[in-house]
Amino acid sequence: DTGVSQDPRHKITKRGQNVTFRCDPISEHNRLYWYRQTLGQGPEFLTYFQNEAQLEKSRLLSDRFSAERPKGSFSTLEIQRTEQGDSAMYLCASSLDPGISNYGYTFGSGTRLTVV
Amino acid sequence: AQTVTQSQPEMSVQEAETVTLSCTYDTSESNYYLFWYKQPPSRQMILVIRQEAYKQQNATENRFSVNFQKAAKSFSLKISDSQLGDTAMYFCAFRVNFGNEKLTFGTGTRLTIIP
Image 1 (cartoon, rainbow over the protein chains, first blue to last red):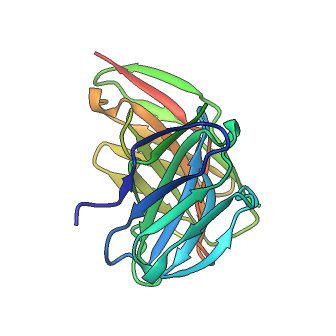
Image 2: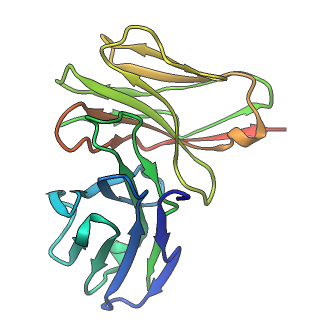
């Protein structure tokens, strides 16, 4: 297990198209997080899963965004009808339950989305 | 709600020198964690150092140390004997010690180590 993997690394799409990103967390990590990072800003929380359950969604996550984590393993983040304002780096991170370990998150390398 | 402020957008320092990055935060919680993350150009974010709010002793990891002032809500990062590989964006982050443990990040400091 080499860490958190995200695919694709880069995505260029036309406005109005749908895109889907994938995240494969560290296998024993039961928590998975999605963040969005725009240029010159720190990452902002979007949503998180504990196993397969999506437990919180940020107000940043509009109705055009949906995330899933079937079977509590990999996760997908879909953006429908993309807008130019969706252009950002989408980061995935995973962690153990803090009751087990407090070593914090492991981040993936991110998916950079450009909407043209 | 928690906020994290990093007031230094960019810093540069000569190789082998010491540099301190500033971070302040605002919270009404008493039980929380603070972190410094490093994000090298086009590479993933990695954890540099973490501090539990209930610990008075400042955390240290090799050349990296923090100055945690709980009453002042200040959490600065000191990098000693800076190396070219320290060139990166550095983010200060906060999370409470309950609930979903989501991180709240500052806007970052771009640090450049000059050879």
